[in-house]
Length: 394
Image 1: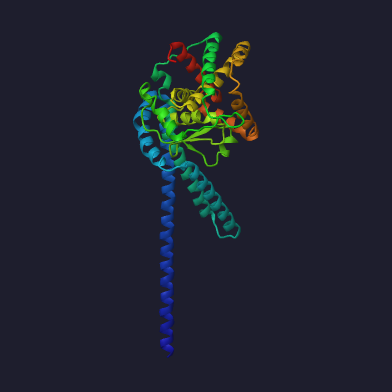
Image 2: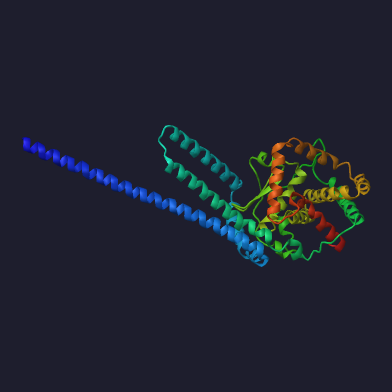
């Protein structure tokens, strides 16, 4: 019996040793697999960032490349990614942004708790950081291929043969008078609420697409597929940044702020859709929006386009010839005043530190992408409007 007991103990010991060896080997394999995943994430992240940087640099030094890319490759992304994202009624990028923020927050908190309980080591923190780097690499690459390169393509004005030259205060005054007449003529044709403020009473999405498509014959560079513009579910995030809309390159979507005064919305939706044709310069996107909305058949769109053009041109006239501005301003219909007052009151609610910081960030971003005037470039649509008026295009 004693011999059998010894043999049984030896067998059990051998089995335990075998199990320990197997566990050790499995641990080594698991560790090796984890290292492969780590190297893979590093390689993918580094590769995406490197490609994005190279493409950005090439686009900056070669307008020909940027133009070719925008016309032949970016248009493919719009037709595929943009069309797919357009199948759903909400902003895909907005939802993914909330999911991403929630995911980072939850995993970060979980990591801190495990660290306090001494259940998380350096390698787990390292993995979490690698995941953040990978996400950043993917987003940066998508930004460059769906947005950044397009900043350096041939301008819309150059492609359309619009020559921007110096103009006098008198010429700008004449344009402002013309715009005042247009605004006045449509101010009485739009739906208004009890306070006299315009109410957008036509379907926005389908009409915005039709308005943009209406420019394709005269301006072939605007030909292509246009997905529906979408209002953000949480437009507050734009309001506090003093933004009326945003183009999201990650899913190639045109989004607008649903909280803004209604006369802003058709113009803004057209502005954001113009980015999907590869025209990222803000003054050109504003000008395209002016062309699309002011020439469309719906009175609400025309009123929106002409009023936005009037505001921009009058802002410039105010700076260079106050007396002329005052003369033109006195000719504006009283029906328009409730819209202007409602707009001022809306943005006054969001004046503050966040809006100021957002404005500075946007200014820096635009300057970094070749728009030397920064946020002031939004007003440069005036140059294009005056040039077209002088050329007799309006």
